[in-house]
Image (cartoon, rainbow, N blue to C red):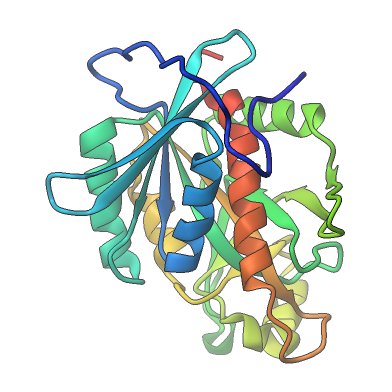
Length: 271
């Protein structure tokens, strides 16, 4: 399969996507929290078809573009950033995104810290499952249910169709992973000690934990509504096994945005 999306350089096209049904203005909604995440997503959208931006009714900027799926059907993408880090701001941005575009699938794109040995800096974790809890208090871990089977099948199809190791000519190659992430566990700086030991002790196969916006993923997965497929695409900024002080945030944000763009053709609701 060939992909119209490219990791660098804009698409030179003049065709426009046909108008979607009135009830759906975008097949895929993208939610970001940090400006770094948004810049990477916007750069990826600008390499799609017919990129544009506008203001939503409540004032937040929205970024739009589209790609065709394997059958040539347009898959429209609309991206919105939460005004501030935190679950309440993210919830408001999510509501604005859903009210304006009514996307069947919403993707939370951003950063995370790796805790599994196989996950390295710059890698990307795709997750439709969430594990919550807080190890210092001994809180019992909880789980947000996995996404609907339809999204799972599309993720399986995507990971079968694309190389799991994404080679890049500039040397910034990275690997794709699929598995649960943790929310409300700890910041990445703490991963080197308590979190990794706790996850091992309770037997949770978590690949990564949220960083910087500790409750956004939980709010997103619990509040998105049963009618919408929910997916997190997280670039790994650092791991429990690297030297202290290393930060790969720019690289991780770029890779997460690139993988989201590669995934878009697989997210047509009629696929």
